[in-house]
Image 1 (cartoon, rainbow, N blue to C red):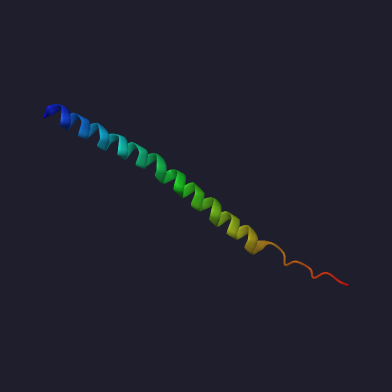
Image 2: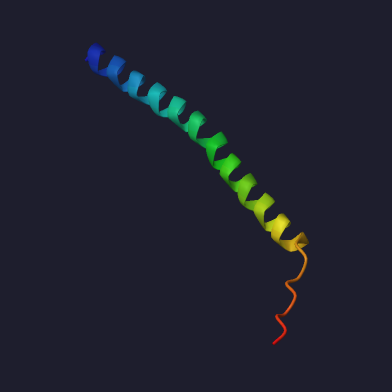
Length: 51
């Protein structure tokens, strides 16, 4: 029974560690997406082609 408790604790700690790694990665992706939207918003409007 004690071994099962140790294994459960190890799994919980590993899951928490992976979660802490995943959160900053998701935040960085979201930040890059927002930066791209800002760049598109500031881009000059395309000039229509003349025929």
